Image 1 (spheres, rainbow, N blue to C red):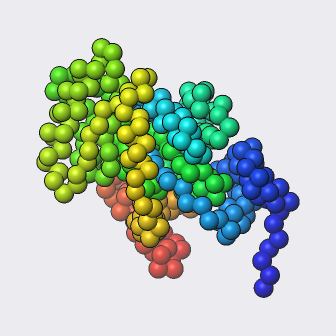
Image 2 (cartoon, helix red, strand yellow):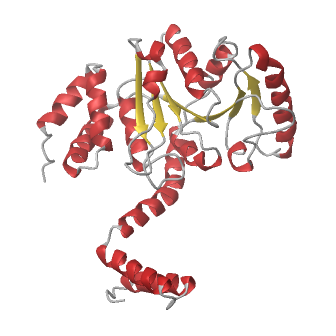
Image 3 (cartoon, rainbow, N blue to C red):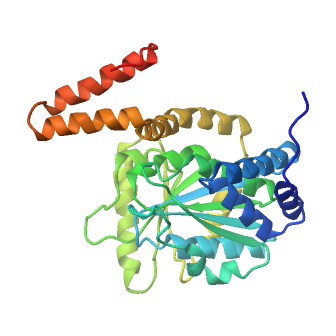
Length: 329
């Protein structure tokens, strides 16, 4: 059985990416993120073809942390420094989606003007997608992989910045860095067990000007607090994106490790459980029979003919019967 021929658009994009055309790479990502099945199919043709011949292994680093921590400015400073060392750098920013339209609210390309104007840099914002808690969607992996095939040495990923729910991104990258702003007094904002147990480095940003003393105090407090997690040793470092202090040390950290391809595959297997549950739920909620059944149960609750517990039980019984091959509620 012969393999299906490539669509003309797919072939055009593949040739463009092989020739280091960032516009072709952007087109490929747009296709992969499309809700249109035909466009997504063409995007997957591009990705599969490029992966088949790809020999490049990018270092994949994610930056998470609370809004206002200065992640964008920090990533730009790191990217600019890596460029001076001769590396190619791609930045993927996962922006929060509008709960109404689903569109991306922010656009980090506008916040990284210096980096975006560099020849060997590529910046691409993506919407996080509605209904996802981990800061990623199934297309996040596709986007990362196609950028890797484009030959970038480093892929720096900026997550939404919602804190503990962003653990999923850990399974798509080699290193996860938590960026935090200086805090006042003894407030350890963002010190949550879930995220601190999986990050590889904690950066206290904005170690400059009037915030310098607060940043140093925050770093000391985090180092002390992290002693309660002896099984996972996490370094805490100070940096300033504005003054470019600590940037060299961060760059050394993200360069000084061996890429483990086997570990990457194991992480994807772990991620399947979480992504599958979200994808299956979204597919399920689009089913007309399910929507009608939920409407019936909602009406029964509103008219006080049914309790919430019994309504949920009715849905579970129906789904169980479907899995056993019985289609009627």
